[in-house]
Length: 200
Image (cartoon, rainbow, N blue to C red):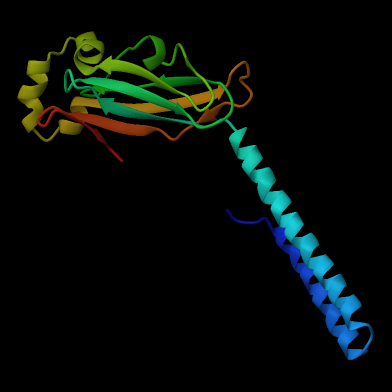
């Protein structure tokens, strides 16, 4: 975490002024112990300013909305996935998602959470789990079958078969002013290996 310029300038000025005063007092042969006490006081003030600033940053970060998601395959089927949402803040969050699914470039209309129409409400530092099935929730909506997708999986269009360009955003519960959008996360399903793969 980098310190801002104003903080560096303030601390630098205090330290420089303290040492300059101390050196001047030695050269003038004035009360060295008194000047040493002054220097100690100035350095203590500099440390307290740094401590206060970083304490403020820590407190601010925990009150800043922050969430993430992960796609985790479930044990019952390689086509069934948990959508795990983590809230990293002290605020209750409303989390939204759009899978933006396409099958061979054809958009797949999705409702509810995965279509960006309803939210998941997640408690402070909480975890919520949703789930979706590539076979029933996505392929069936564009009249494609699992067998057809597996048959064509050996070609060069593996990434185009089932592609997700996932949008994920959130805001604190009861407020839409603090809406935060995470970067899109592209994924595709490899039907030859039965795996969801991040396409970064």
